Image (cartoon, rainbow, N blue to C red; front, side):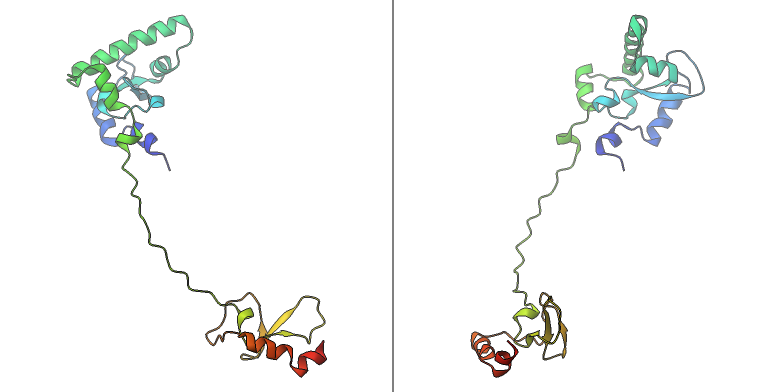
Length: 193
């Protein structure tokens, strides 16, 4: 998945067709046919140049390489001359009446201008109901019949092993302080200790 800026810089299918037809499917600079690419002219791709007909000229791989990455003084001079030639061509053929500076501002990607605002959605706080655990149930007791050092718990209501941290069942009954004191004083618990 490409970024919004990358999508902005890409020439879409209709723009590519238009530019190829306008430039007669040959390199504008040297007239070569074959492996052709669309060159960003006013604002290059690295600077967020928009992929549209006012910013693109058809060029061969060699001319595109010289325009983007000139090596040596001779290629630098050639790149400057070719860039000026392409800019003049686009101003004429696309009937651009605004200044080059204004055109560059329109063609340059801007987050504030070109991305839709992100809506801020305030969700009302969800009231948290107290979550009961098996350990808080009056019917959950420690199982003393095992020889393990890890304590296990037994549910007297369901007659099964219960995990102390498991959510409580539908028949949960709150353990009261009186119930706890009764259990501690129970004859069965005293003899088990």
